[in-house]
Length: 308
Image (cartoon, rainbow, N blue to C red):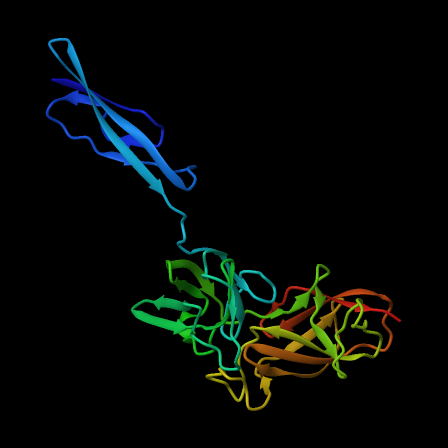
């Protein structure tokens, strides 16, 4: 007999629409654009023998549930929010369904699993494979903040790695480049003011409770991802027993000009501090601040407000 297949709704699909019996038809669905709910449809099979048509109806029910699988849209440096990832850097994963709910670590020792969420960095170089667990500080359905360990093997740096997130509803991964150094300065507000403090603890800024810098100010800038210290650190979970001096040479630039660097080093998990002294003569304005590392790497700029 000759036979034809027709579908009553656009979300149904069929592998074959006509033929001579016997033949098989694979019926499928395309839920694109359908909201959560239950949908009804029919597959109509029309056969004809000696010009006498006969129609068989197959009822189809489609249940569309809420998709709770994790999705990673980007992995960025937690200070610059640029795709610059490396050892000793705080990072942020942005996406959907990344955690059941918001949660934050409450102790100095950071967990490997927080609210059912864990992160791994899987790297490969030839036959060498390295898998590293990340310390987790904060999770929410839209964002995860975690720390990339210093212990990543040098053979995997500047190469391709997979960032893998595991949550109670599934696993997602994304390919990233793990750089040898991924320095960035922290900032705050829409103006991207430098996360800086004076020696008395007052935050540098222009809003109530802060005060702007001026010529001759001594202040501390903060960043992440500036690499190893002297002596080198390994497991930094729980913090440092004492500050460590940065192993690489750095130059702090204000409006493109070097300023006096008093001290540079690591003071906490992935937290680097730079004590600087501004020039005595500095006009009123908002100045871009960057830090250069030996080798030509320079951070994204942050803004330092200078007033009289």
